[in-house]
Length: 348
Ligand SMILES: [Zn+2]
Ligand SMILES: [Zn+2]
Ligand SMILES: [Zn+2]
Image 1: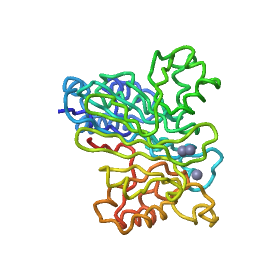
Image 2: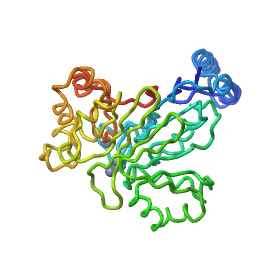
Image 3: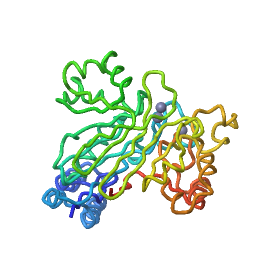
Image 4: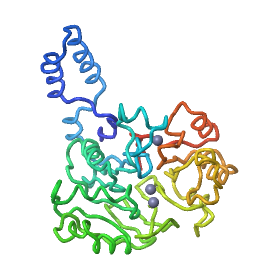
């Protein structure tokens, strides 16, 4: 059994960290009564934590698993310059589950892991993915990029000379995206120094990343200043997932969303904005994303089984669905859809 799919969420302390919490922290704290808190915390945490030693021993032939490593729009949350209620408290107390949109894929049989997107939160997401392999894989076998907007590729900077100085990390990208990375600094330096190796993709041509895993890039309409934009269909031995974090309106796509949904078992779809109220009642047709209410309306006549495949992702910092207690969140659930959550996993 691949035990590593028990996602840790906000990371739990290691034995060493617990030791440090118990021994060092009390020395810093003024009151002796505080000492008992970390001891209790560690006891509670270890009761339910994943034993990474066991996980690494059991890295085996279980089906591959998709993990949600981030759900937020490019600008993150808290969002620069935002002093509204959505972000104010997050500057004071950052939330570990507010990471920019990304999926991780772990395949025990081929001993491989993959990232979808290289976000500004790449260091934490890379670390989380490593934990999900029981520490077995320190460097992902590949990174799939959707397009050249900051939330989706700028994390590549961490692979360069100033940070990791990685060697030969395969980066899968479409032709314009590949050209953009090759021809523009600082990304071109990653290519010249072989920190990354560009793996060209072609629209709708499946890439076999292991004997039982395929990734199919599917072009979608978007604000394509620097690159084209793709979503991905990730096909496993038993189930498959559609991932479209950014797209213009569904009716500007040359494909039918309902038909695409029928082909997969789960779909992570663009949820940048919830409704017109969120964007100050601007004309929704002017905003180049499908609002969540529009996506829900578009699929509302489908059977419950189809609607329940939809997991909304890529939420702007203002999106009320980032808050589970909001009326919008309840509405989405009542209509039979889901909101992707950091730490969710789905077996393929
Ligand atoms: Zn985006
Ligand atoms: Zn905000
Ligand atoms: Zn974008």
